[in-house]
Image 1: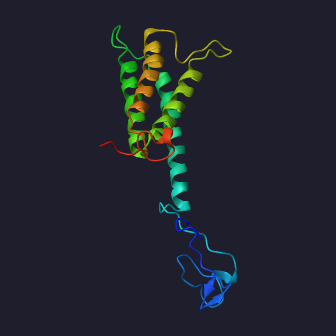
Image 2: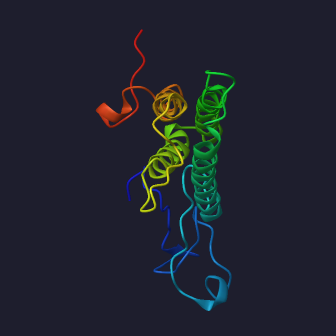
Image 3: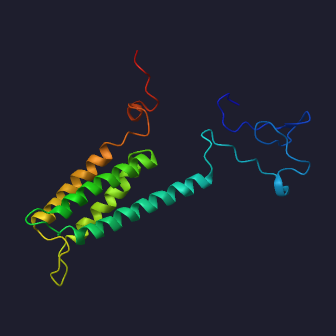
Length: 182
């Protein structure tokens, strides 16, 4: 086996070749692995993640998608509140879109965490701006509607772009971690 091999499974027990042993060379109990099965153990991941971590991360992304969708629907109905000719609610909603997207990305530790609520907000805002068969619109073609749609898209893209990347710069191009210059 290679020294970098992740499995680290030894096939020797008490000097007898062919016997199973656990991770990092530790032998199994007398009757083999738990439950009497003779399968090899699942190797530990080098980053220490467990299947539960993947489930929790998936649930977090689902909650962020739901948050983006709900905010898109709420904003589509609330964007038309004005203070005189100034679309105050649309401006406040654009700022909130930026904050939600940026904080989601920082909380999840990468741009994917920011892109999920931004994409769902964009989808819902777009759907709510379409004319229904009855002729109804939630986001009309007014100043407030344009500020909400266009300003929200700019705010969502800016929020995603301002989240630091999860990997070192240049890794996507080189396929490995970039070497520091010095």
